[in-house]
Length: 139
Image (cartoon, rainbow, N blue to C red; front, side, top):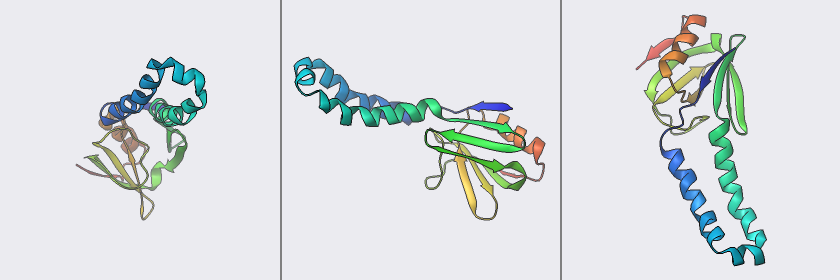
């Protein structure tokens, strides 16, 4: 099994920090928390979801399958069904188990596509092409 870390740089870090600001403000006013501790639950849920996505995004290849996981979004693609990989572009709609831009758009089957953003695009592409040399690469 070959593992590939997700690229975790960029805008997602700023979103997590922005989501933490209301919690920091709540913790400054300790009396408000002690009196109304149920206020924390709706404030914590989005932050916990973002942290889960941030920590759980990963990709790996096992038994000629490309597996992807990002929190509740997970799946696998048969590498022999991959037709084309667009390198260094960002997919704005569709399935995106990725945290940054300029990743890989993987086109498979006839109309399916997936956007992933590994730490090293070339390393993952080389591994996929070594398994399926018929993959078209577009830059």
